[in-house]
Image (tube, rainbow, N blue to C red):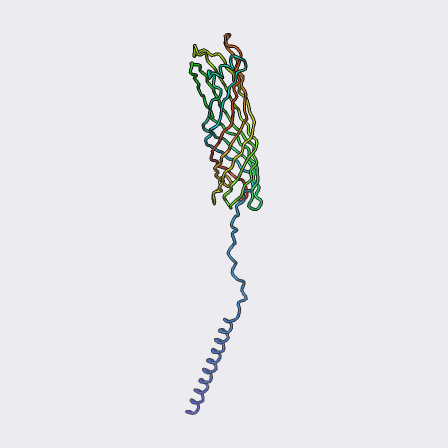
Length: 281
């Protein structure tokens, strides 16, 4: 009986040993499997978002405003007969007289740029309302009075542009064709009766010439409006619409001969502008 118990207990110990051995083998296998490379697909990489590269290439439209002035306009007058020539020589009529129109300018522009490397070439056309006006008076030592009037009602240009881009900063030069509606008038009065008009002449017409200048433009980063990039610019322009001769003829029966007054119509414009550039930003 006692031997049977010991035999049964021995069998139980063997079973426990076998179970422990099997457990150890399974644990070792699991540990080895953990060290093997995983065959599962890697998690998807985060989506790559490309950083947009700005380019000056594209069409644009915008507006501008600024100030126009002339610092060198001269009105010269000569007599076309013996009496009127003598009056100019004596200083009764001004042989040379300064007149410098100035005032507000503002309007709109449109154009196209093409960027090639860091260089930018393009064209621009604009038209501006101008308040360039000046009335000047002259009185001689004898009391002869003269009045001159110069105005430019609008000014337009068609220009080429060439520049160099420092990323969003563009430095450019520009030049081309200019046109404008110019009015010039000269009136000379009787010295004995200063309110009595003796000679008068005027012309109101479109004149043409050239324009040159330059400036700097900046594209505002991370800002768009109506699906367009926004740029701001500062610009200087010099325009020359040529010289104009006005025959100042007699308007009184007692006024002999005539005069010719020559007006220069050029000036400077300093302005700021805002453009909306479509595409490429």
